[in-house]
Length: 102
Image (cartoon, rainbow, N blue to C red):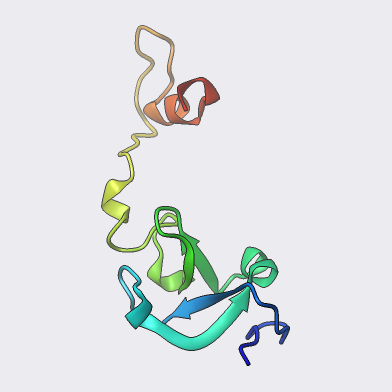
């Protein structure tokens, strides 16, 4: 039976862990290890890709800005040092963080 590598629980809802070095996970990339969602939320070693969802957990070393290698290119380019423009944005990042633009 499957069990969490962190706490050892044997829940039904375990997230499979992708093999280290996986750029965009598929079922073929699953290792034989699993982690429960609670441990995954607290984990410093594993995380999920923002775009892939919780289909599998990546090593934190395989994620950049919470995205797998394939999806990191889909992140918006944010220039933190942008000048204020006519509308008063201090940067494009502020625009994306504003819930009125979601």
